Image (cartoon, rainbow, N blue to C red; front, side):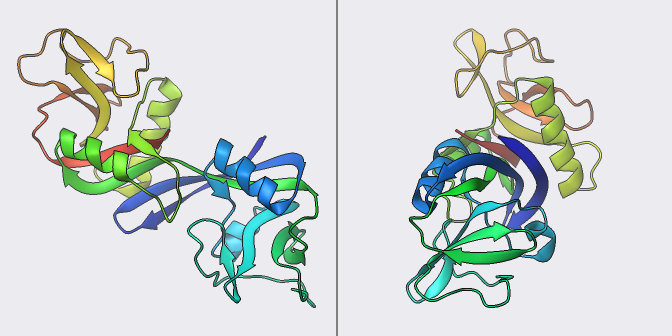
Length: 237
């Protein structure tokens, strides 16, 4: 797999980091759809020229259904479809990308390339307590996707840096806190997904501050009172 590009999209109160991956594999359109959903989020969706310019040769999420061209993700109507001249052709109900344009093809054809989107990290711009954020992430569906999410685990320094970059892109505030999936339970700090904890800037046995936040001021995961309402991160499982 090759990471081609990254961009941010806004869906209501969600600020989403959307990665575009390209894999050299031979699949039918349905096979490509299954592959993307198993390994990423779904086949690639694009809504403007800047996004489509990043695509490489292979299947996209565009297919003909219910008398119109629709996206695999959410099964919604496609409004931006830069077809090659003479395309699409009758009775060809799936679309692949070849340099600079869309082409139609039989959905059962094998193509040696797949464009996939991955919405792994989502900033939710709603003020909620830690428990409310936990439940929100569990119920979250991004832009029609069937993928599952949970309150974010930021275990590695790369993951923390990615989250900080998102916050800078989403807001101009220099020092604020965002919920992550870290909680003090029993006698230890634990991630909601069971990942290994590190020596963060959190108290060993906190009397009050028992929930984890990412501090944009320090760039560290630290502790806060769980009843405080603030923004939060969800990650795809």
